[in-house]
Amino acid sequence: MAGTVTEPTARTVTTLADGRELIYYDRGAAVPRNAVDRRPLDPRTPASQVRFDPVTGDHVTIAAHRQARTYQPPAEECPLCPSRDGRLSEIPADDYQVAVFENRFPSLAGAPVAAEVGGGGLWTAGPGAGRCEVVCFTADHDASFADLSPERARLVLDAWTDRTAALSALPGVEQVYCFENRGAEIGVTLAHPHGQIYAFPFTTPRTARMIGQAERHRAATGRNLFDDLVAAERADGARVVLAGEHWTAFVPFAARWPYEVHLYPHRRVPDLTALDEAQRAEFPRLHLDLLRRFDRLFGGGRTPYIAAWHQAPARQRAELGLHLELFTIRRAADKLKYLAGVESGMDAFVNDVTPEDAARRLREVAR
Image 1: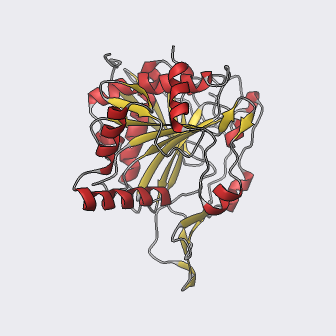
Image 2: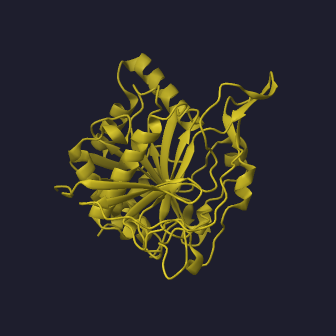
């Protein structure tokens, strides 16, 4: 099936009252964006640290100032809705299609500095340099990503791609991570449909493990792990949920979550910026189809989920293949999958649903 034909994306950049950047994305011609942020905001002074764990080799971000961030406000006080009727929000305009702005309570912010802080030796730390952004998918507070049209979903993809390119070029940024959390069960603090983008000053632990596995596979076989994985799942078919001309979605053989789907482009690319037009055009239909299937899994309603883009780091681009991971913490209509002693303590997952049954169920709820 052909993908969605879209008009070019217009990009309008402005600043908020405290100096943070705000970008409007519109399909077609640019919409005049003259609204000014009139809120009396103080300049930001985020003070996070990135500390190194000598036992695991992981980096951990310490961001105590985020304790004061906005937490589940009523709809009439939503900071992601447009500014209307005298109520001022993070979006000065009275309407928008897609908007991206620097997070007011970022885990990471600012340019890197050369000097380390901390005790040295086993205890090393540095400033929490990097950038955190909020991506508002729609001005409609009561909608969700699954409610978007293919054209609007493509606009979000264009925004993700544009921000990946811009953030990857910042000094000190090692990896860009675009993701969406949905549902109070996941821990979402704002109900408005939105996602986030993190520009990390380090390669995240999960990505480092995947790259290590891909390098070992290359050494053993001479081939790319992700190419072999997609080819094997497509050939087997037992865990394939849906497939298009340029993308395939499947439940991984060793899925950690009860319902977990990975969406891969057939032509391997390192990140969003490397997708071609055919891949971009087909993606919205498949992604929206998956999200709507998740919502039908448990008899209707909005299933809580995390949708996470895995992209190659800035300096390790040869082996990792771009893919989207979508999973829910719900294992039944009235049960959640909690990370208890085995998962949280040992990072050793136990799944309550076989991947083959999960794939079958996701195929059954297609329309």
